[in-house]
Length: 340
Ligand code: NAD
Ligand code: TYD
Image (cartoon, rainbow, N blue to C red; front, side):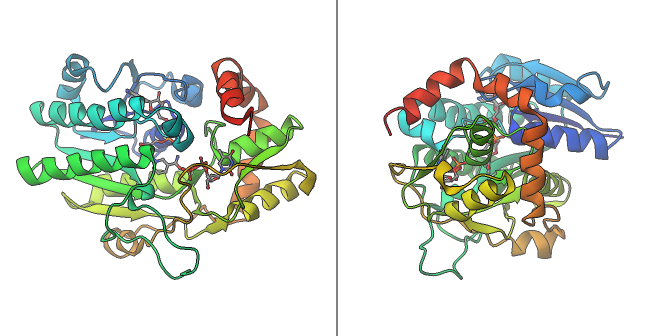
């Protein structure tokens, strides 16, 4: 018998890639996508599977306990992606981050417990560990690294991780936590650095590089991340944390130069702008536990190929990001970058 999953945030970047993967690779599983369709939720991301009989969409907020009680009785597991996910927005206003990421996660945990859902996978981030120094390139985040978030976004994710842990310890719930590094790939909202820079260049606009551009991120292809989450759902041990990373560290300056080269643009397209407040210097994941205990490794994240394919995806899907970048997003862009 196949499983029925409740996937929260399935209209966003990673959630939509996860739902597509599950529908394609588990042919007797059903997926219910619960998403509030905030600014970053977009049902176009799943247009190709919208009519699949094993897929269902429910529009709603994870804070709505009554709605959760109508959906959960049919579900074997929850895979929880829904979140406010952008660091810069959390610096402008952390209120929605606490409401969705902290309170919303608590509501979901309570509903899962009330409805005897068998497994709860909480999708978190390497940002809960804080930052690594630039002068110790061997240092990486392991699952034992202390939680030390620096932004309101990562603090809200860390708070939700602690609640998930506590529900396992207190109530014996079968919860698991994944902590992944920076994702890239199709359907990423163009406020995040790669789709922002690629789409700006396609519009012949400069790309705003924060500070000295030497901050390091560990890039993983979104489908590698989704396969890892599916692996944790199927094979992980209750109560455990699993780090997921791409073994692919780059400074933002290197990333920017690579994008400029792929797109045939020159350095004059870089606009050096004021740094992000509290900008974490470096993230890097040690994913040994995923490899040794669950047999997972990234297979799609190696550059330059994976980056070239992603840039090409945004070139081929200009209408997708143009629609996303119009309207409310345009106001955000002016507020964020207008006077920088
Ligand atoms: P995203 O912003 O693209 O998508 C978030 C989705 O959640 C949207 O569809 C939105 O409508 C939905 N949502 C927001 N608030 C909601 C609410 N209250 N109720 C129901 N739905 C709501 O984000 P993403 O990049 O796909 O990230 C997904 C998850 O993965 C997040 O939990 C994030 O912390 C985590 N993560 C992201 C990255 C990354 O690089 N993007 C890396 C590691 C972990
Ligand atoms: P982002 O995609 O926002 O992800 P995160 O903050 O979760 O790592 O940013 C990735 C890196 O790119 C980060 O070091 C900040 C930098 N950045 C810029 O230099 N300019 C930009 O306009 C944005 C959005 C990010």
